[in-house]
Image 1: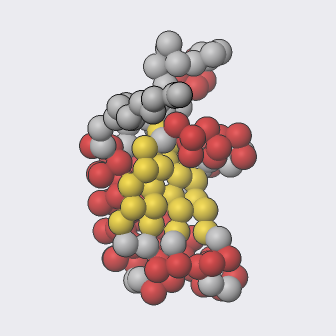
Image 2: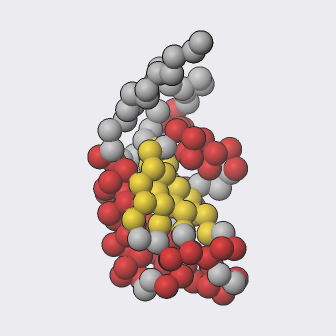
Length: 136
């Protein structure tokens, strides 16, 4: 089980991680990896934010299945994230979204999907340049 300080709970924190995080999908999960902000990015840096542990949050929509299936998927993902959490840098927020395919996967497959998606999101090139459109 994840410790209380390692969980993303507020809607604001979920939104921030989804907005600024790098995304990677593998199997039954989509991971949004949001590393700790630098001092230049923060509007109001605080000691508490700078020294916090990595955190994880989970999104399992009704598209995954009924309540029993959604809770089973969420428990499996929490357990997998608890095993991976010590390997994540401090201050990192990770939002894990389950896809409908997650309901068909067992724990070991979900754990592998999570680990591979985190690895892909961590190694993704940040700040990929977007093509500029010419305006008439």
